[in-house]
Image (cartoon, rainbow, N blue to C red; front, side, top):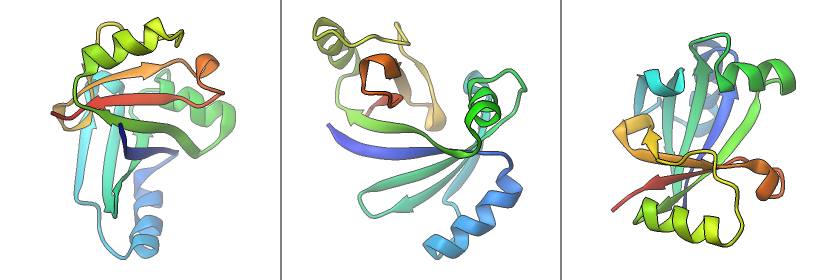
Length: 131
């Protein structure tokens, strides 16, 4: 596994993107809506991975609930795996609680799955398949 990206929940991409452009020295490499996740995503490349800013597109989405409850901030850590099905089976067998079974579609049309934070020391972990 390797770190793929850090997901940061924001209230507004319009407000957050200029801050990260100044911080990281450039514009996002992509911006897209991910209907299945109910978010708009702005992606910044950084050495060794990416930073994804996440803006909710629905008031009842997971990201909207996160921002309402905790405020903007780090939402999840994503790890890249070569075989998502095998990783999920191994992690489930090791006692990790899965949020997604089967995997679903995330940003960039990639297959993703989340692990429940109750089984990962309070951190929401996303796995993304990169073959």
